[in-house]
Length: 78
Length: 226
Image (cartoon, rainbow over all chains, first blue to last red; front, side, top):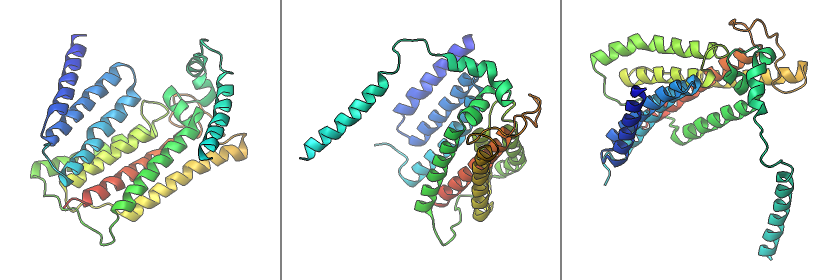
């Protein structure tokens, strides 16, 4: 049970980090950390199908698309 | 004049919407459908995984729509980013450790993806998940090896063939049964790999289709980086 609370705290910290961060590459890594923990949560809530989707799409594919977008625009937020 | 027409059209819409909504009883307990799925899935579709039976069998038409949406998204992106000159990816070479690790992991990731969509009716996961996992494996190779190429033509053929298989499986229900996407093949023994009629066929087609689409999408995007 305590592990779930630790994960919940980490996911909130990662969310605040990725909103506040000026370096967009680090912000994207924050969102992918959110996806990792979210997929663990989905698994704990007995939705393994959704956990698989979140792990594949949220962690890998959407992260790389954000990284490509940053590469083609600007890395630092004004 | 235009305002009058607009009000008139809106009034007609409002009347029909209201008359439809009034037929829905207010505040009644209506969770019978979920209980029905849980109780009758194995008997009716032969799939042990209830989520798969809903996605492919009970709501199979919605899945066809979703696959079409993904196809249109990939096509649109390809149309915007298409370049006749046959661009190469211009990423830097990855380090030796990354390259060796990617080489070892790539077959395992593709195998996991294939496992996920072949066993979609037995274990969690299915076509979308398996296809996305395969695309992540190909992405790993894209990022580690500059020379790793996927054949665009092969991707297009796989994608089209998988889409045709899905639609033909739907029409087989129309020909030998009563409705589109009806499960006309024998259901078999629940829990075996060869069971659940057309569900594994459709999910394998969806897996190939999603994998090919996402791979082509990543390939197109990575080639735009200068």
